[in-house]
Structures are given as C-alpha cells and as structure tokens.
Length: 277
Image 1: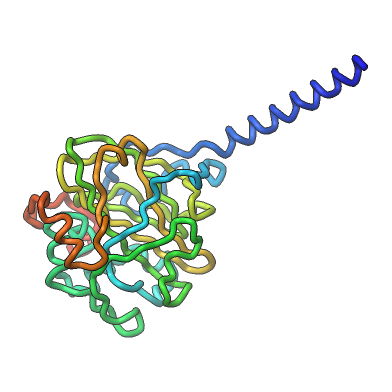
Image 2 (image 1 turned 45 degrees about the horizontal axis):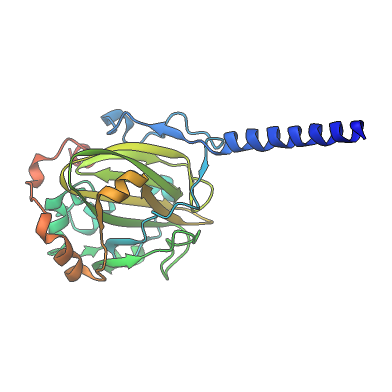
C-alpha cells in the first residue's frame, strides 16, 4: 500500500511539473517597451520574434470589436510582402491622406472629405464607415470579399483622461502595422498563431485626450484576422470609439467633443514622409 501511495505521489508530481512547464512555455510573450519605432525599424520585425513566445488571450474580455475604416478591403495586394511597404491610404486618396496622417486627429478629420478610391482590381471606391469584427473568428478580415491577398485598415480613437502608458496586445495574420498619434509603434510580418493569441505585448504612450490608432494587417493566404486589446487598467480608465456609432456620421458625433485638431504638417518624420521624398 505504501508503494502504491508513493507511485501516486510520483505521478502527480510529474504531471504538475509538466503542466507548470508547458504553462510557462506558452504563457509568455515578448515585451516591446522601447517604442515608437526608429527610422531603421519601421519595416523590421521585432527581435526576438519567436513562435515559442506566445500568450493565449482568448479569455480576455477587452478585445476591440468595433472599428472605423474603409468599408471594404484592399484586394489583390500581391501578397503581404509586396503590399506592406506601400501606403495604400496614400494610393487611394491620391496623396490627400497618408496612413500615418490617418493616425492623427487632423488626418482622421480628412476622411470626412475624401473617400478611398483604389483601382477596380484592388476593390474600387471605399467609403469610410464603422464596421464590427468578431475577435474569435480566425477569418474576420474577409468581410464578404476575397479571402486571400487582402489588406484591412481599422481605426479607433482612445479618449484618455490623463497621459499614460498602456500595454497593447495585437493578434494578427499575417503582417501587422500599428500607428498611434503619427508614430509607428509596431511592425511584424509574423502571424501570431490564432485569432486571440499574442506574440508581443507593446508598451505605448497615450496622451491626455484623443489618441488615434491605425491598425493595418496584410494577408496572403489561409486564416485572416485582425484583433487588438489593451491592458485591463487602460480599458478601465479610457473610453474607446467607435462605441455606439454604426456609420461615419455617428462616429464623428461620438468623438467631436474631445478632438483637439493639430496641423498635419507637424507630424514626426515617418515612413510615408521618407517614401514621398
């Protein structure tokens, strides 16, 4: 009997060690805390960018579901390695708005005046609107169009009562780029593995008042998802828009009370500026 109990204890100990080890191996992600990205990092992957560094955030209640952006995807992008260096907002507005300027209040306001007019083979004219995505859906980028070789742009506005640091957790398939207030904070060509799985937790700076976030994901084939949430303290302290709005007019009605417009020309030097020069 003593030997039997010793065997049970030994088995239980081994199981606890295995569970604990696997939990540690999976329940961590690389932290990025030295942003925004510098000029030589704008199209570089994070380092390290290891598939073994992953966190399952499926139980997180803060995944963002509502976005503002073009009412359809950029299509036939040639695969995300080809599309990623291109500014598709600049292309679609003939230089009136860039994707970096879109991440500012001034650039966001310009969307009231200019639609995105991509070529017919790339989706044609897209109006700006509010759309909703299911964070649990591993193909939430498809949006009724082609399922491969697409780019999706999503915009949110974060109204923060104070300047603060926040932890941003993106999940994406494939190539993700994120700008906040005219600066690029995240660039990663590696898919995260699942719709609510995170490879990197990114420390970002939010200013008091309106913070404009532009999230772009380019897809080549297979699953296609674009998801984002912030840390619990940030979600408790700020208000994220779109909230109750469902179109462009109601979106701007929600946010007009706290927008401080800054001149587009005062943006930090960005990849879009470098490309134009």
